[in-house]
Length: 257
Image (cartoon, rainbow, N blue to C red):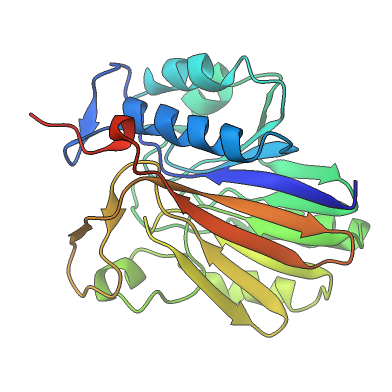
């Protein structure tokens, strides 16, 4: 395989109830519509990457997450977000196809998944243990690396969002700067599309499978853009091609009521 396709879904915010709504959106409905579009457009994906806020503060949401993803024949790579309940997440999503954190190796790439959850906080922080694990993973393997977490490690030019990002981003970047084989960093949390560059490292934020936040806003504001997902195409030479797909099918539109 000359390239490897990875599908990123983020911030589904599921509830135990199938009709649970967040900001007027039935999150189960929009997630399923996004997945259907992604699988139709990229059936040859190697893995699914879900970058946090799997549930909306509801441990029963993990049962629904397992119902939706558990029968898939591809790895489902997950990291926790600020609305997750890590203990419940690990308990309900034990075993294949799920992998919570750690590193996924395939086709000359490693996907390093980090836990930026900080109890009681909307923003995130990488513990000393996670920072050491990141350094160890990148030291032990020189294959191309895509590093993933929930919270954004760079400014998003949005005053309210930049107050709830990764609190110790300097520690994170200090480690990445030591490893030249890091090709990209991907995250969720911000509910919007973003691409940037820091040195030779490409940066990616991906919109939610539900509602979006208005980019560049000083105060909390909802955008009118539809649910979305990101497709990564990771090549043997370390290059990354990527595209955000916005899903405007009727099933993914904002629910009424």
